[in-house]
Image (cartoon, rainbow, N blue to C red; front, side):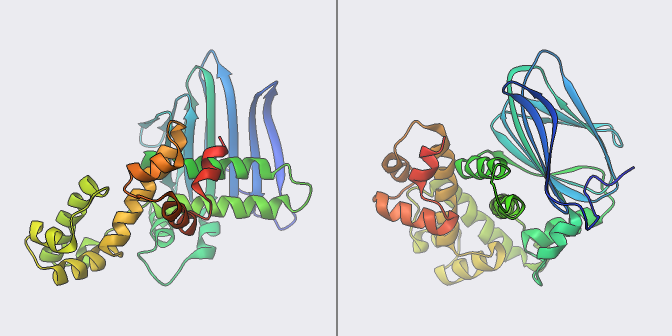
Length: 308
């Protein structure tokens, strides 16, 4: 098997058109050493199979905007069906699989492959960081593992568009593409909820889990800290302390994260104004909502809504 990623110093940013016919295309872009993406837009009457054999350990993200595809792991004979409007994060240390794109009048898929030696550049001393978790995952002997699945949000589509069109830049397209790809990785990796249960007591896990489930159901109009503590059978001091220890964020921080993630999904649908989206997720004032959204994601909600 050959390396899927280039490792030679003389190689640089390159665009390869595997298929091109009018608006249909399958384009591979080698952004930098260890970072490759596929931009796929097709109208298929029959399935299209791309086989991947590779010696490198990798994570890869598949975003299916339109159409359907399936990943067949030939080493374990397992199959993973990918649905429209969803994004999937995989880990693999032994690649021998097929990406099967099913017949559809309109298929649009984006795949970003990230080699372990690319991820290694950004490891931290905190093993609970998503980047550390993913790197350790692919150091094990796994064929193919689905790490995370979630509906595709507005920010993801916005960043994918930026990644794809960076190749058209007249200057520094490699740096621009890598910068955009890293923004996309930061966003997708931040959605991971990594919990090391061995580090916490049973009491901590139970209280933090109860609080999390209550917030999930009522983040738009959440109970006060005192009321939430009562519902969890504890006091507010223990609740705040245990929640922070287990989930690595405050109760308010987690509530805000849920609100923004829901807003990010609503902005993709084009059915609501920014003010309506703000109200739907629990913010009374559009300006306050927009400021928090920008601080978190680096882009204003109106810009996301206007980009589609």
